[in-house]
Length: 330
Image (cartoon, rainbow, N blue to C red; front, side, top):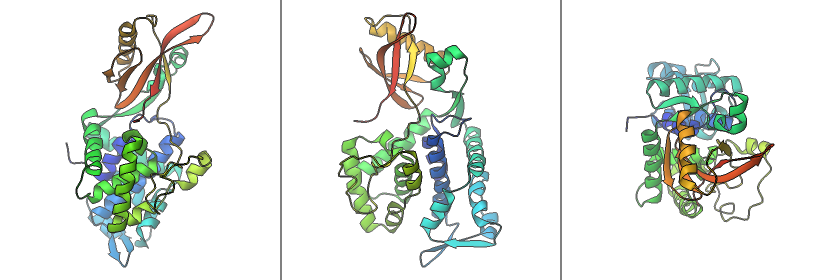
């Protein structure tokens, strides 16, 4: 895999399937987490001066470093035209995540342009545009798609580092925290795996200073409450040690939604129905892979998994088709 910076790696996970032209709640959460990833990237690269838990960033150091445009769109507003600014790591993370929406849009453009120039991110028709209602209305929507090989390499490496025995690198600790704060962690781990991850996080919290600082820092809590009240889920994860909760109280923010694809074949021929759906999706430019065939198939579309559920909608006459429902690890 090509050498990617921390913020670039996380952006490929967080931006995948997000709409390009609309600032949805899900994308806003992703961008705020990505801005925090820039702080962590600069921290790991030694851009800050550390003294008694206080991190100092100077414009002089920023000018002298091999800074990128996406990094500057986050760090320069935090400097406020001052020669230097100080704060602990939590302060830097929280303030980066509070950038105004206009600054977030500048950041999105800078990092997406950077990744597209590297040919690891592209703009494609959004899956929702394939929905019968959007398609018939002629509504065109665009979305980001991360290059499959790179996206898979990032996520599988993260899974291996966390779920297997051994030392966990600082970059992996940062990615784990970023996934938690962005709500993306539920995309990649089953509930059983999350139990193990919770134990790993607790161990890291006790023995790793970076993990202790990160895991007790929340950057999206206020937004989560603003979008939806706390879920009343009686889960052991809510009651785990301070800072190590997987955060089921944070509402899962969908980057995709159920899509209805009209088909010509009736439900008694699952292969014909599925092939019709695949042809339709490929004609829109989507990358599609069949994971499991059957009356309710599982397919991968632009790096995300969906169940293809036989369905029909009532118009003047019944219209048959398939409902694509986002699939999460069990």
